[in-house]
Image (spheres, rainbow over the protein chains, first blue to last red):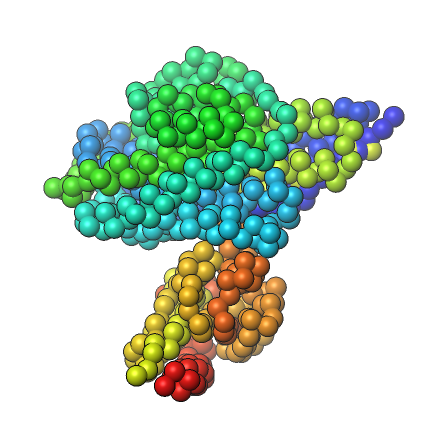
Length: 429
Length: 163
């Protein structure tokens, strides 16, 4: 009879506060719990009674890393409820802003949070001693993402230039063209990032996930599309709640989302990539191949590679948008409130972010629902840990704990988002 | 001929969090008093931005509001080249890295400016709001004068060297 546990009370290098506990009895994993103890933040409740125009700015405050995602999903949901036909020029500018957030968020996760796992360092400070050039590259990449957000969104954290219907003010052509040289550097640095990360050792671990992501024609998804999966799901976002539900679990202040028919599912870079590989640019596809990825990726530890490929894509996409940009005649469309319900879903760096609002005739919010990507991945993270630990029971405790932490960080979990925070416990006797 | 003294003053903080805006408020006070060739920056405290701001700069004076538990308006001065900032200088932010982390990262990468002086001003109220607490607001001119003296000392010694 043997029993043990792997227990991490406060997980490092994640956004927010949480931990995990894996309970092992008789050489079998008995229970896994990703504990989310960051307190719930009740955003949905305090949106009630607020004006439609406040939704993007209030929800942006849920997260300092992906505020644009909240703004984009919120705007889309409002515009859906008020039946606004968006101007393509504004959609392009929104996509450019989203590129900034992807670049900033992916660079932060790849270099500051995830790479130390693969290179064997406690944190990026330790890593910087031996790999100063890599850390400098990561910082400069993050910086160009921030700059893009500042130029388009007004500032890098919680941009204030976004409004329902578009932007308060469109950037000048010159302001965007000035970013091109640095973006070209960033695109090349992103390719270098993928090659660098391609040399890391990845644990042998694959699971048959249901990947869920947006999909829209030939466009790599960010702001628009239908929800699709590799299990045949293909729905407009308005049908989200017919297929997915949120449940409360005792050990978590974040709700767990499941697919009503099939249970746990996977959102984020691996899902986007595997469902939309054909939509990537030739350079991004080539970079994926050169760094050792196939057309589909089912090893969550390789998420760092997929993020690097998306980094390449986001830099190229930003360059494309900038090269054809003309200041739009109108930076926003006027919207007229009406009674109705609207749905929004966009691809945050960590995966799909769903918003739903119900409005009265004055455009006041009657109810709000927000489902962030991390809440959708929590069940999958727990399943990964159970399977991962089951096949590695022979490992010494500290090694096992290290790899478990890494398995959670694969998802770049944003606990602040999920509670609208992470700690680890492996219990082995 | 004199060359550019290459000194910058950076006020760090969030002006929407009451006394957290003390650093930027001091920088605004200093702006009218220090030689115009000295760059004054107001930063939110994002570590990556700080590393970028002091790239290639010889002398950096950084001012940040802190919560060490000392009486409000207590002033700390650190020579960050020779010592690490105390633990309580780190902002408990999981989303980004702050002043102390940026300094340590720069130290590891050998990217610290040749001179880096950090002033910590003990705040009282860090709740949402754009006004400093009366205690901190009242102490601001005296703190500014103290920092101005250091800036002038640094620039005059630099200028003297470069003549």
